[in-house]
Image (tube, rainbow, N blue to C red; front, side, top):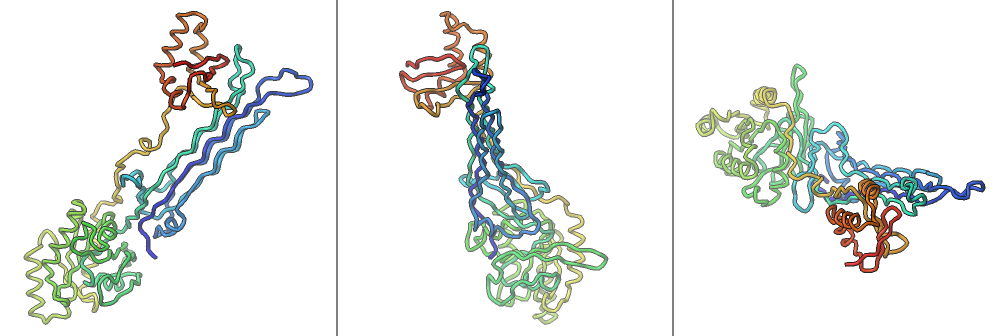
Length: 430
């Protein structure tokens, strides 16, 4: 089954907690703190796998979790870092926020792995918090939490040339005649339910990649039928071959068909209609010579010189060589870079934790004890006399100005609870 969309859940690893311990040796009765740091959590990494052409594997396995960092331990032992999780995606994959549908990352032209979610930082052990005032700190820093997200992956096929047109106009037949692709072909609508890729090899080592985009119907841009699923694959093609049934085998008017398809393309994306395009008048072999010339004149009058009209018969091969020569020429002149979809929403705005110059956390052994620590607080306590009324007022203002009071309230602190700051203890009162 071809799958060009997938919903997945990703989660980075939590940082390991710092450890609280003290040296206990027979000849060192009052050993200092020796709690080790926690390990870093694993990252979530996206990488392009050139051998993949579908998102089916990710559909079948929608949950991806990196490993948590291990906590620190005694004797200053550092916890082991968590293992990363690497998610392989096909070329042309977009990573979107599931809720908003906005693009976070375009893996279309990435050659190197991308760290998508970083694992949490490991917490510091209590060895880091010994000071001249507090020589036996009994707390350590917790590891940073994991980051989790639900994503929508969309695959937008990358090809030099895209075949577009109504169902059953001969796109699959043309692709099978000129490339190594072997699409399913039959005389009914929506024979092609998935895009097919083929390499077109020409004389003189000339080649390009051609994609058969499944037949578009009117209303596709509004999601009628399978329209939106198909239209997304046109966005990365550099040249468009617009195939029409010029022989009106099914009673269609080729000029009206072109106008209808162009309308759908413009509603989906204005940029698509600006791509180099060739109008491929197929199935002309079914018409007598006089009718053939009449149909071609009408098509050329309607669309040239903006869009060149090339008469062919995919079934017999008539005109196919000339079509390929012109197509290759257009591919060579088209911009070389793959279309890149701009970031619509930053990952940081979705998941980045608020970086604070301090940490506030509840004591793991007592829910009524709250710890506040960080280099900024430690420096402040070093030059503030809390026994003095003026110094204590300065301390209170510092706590408010730096949103420490707000953070304590978010954690649910209540009257009578204890707040600890580097050996200083205070009773909370509203």
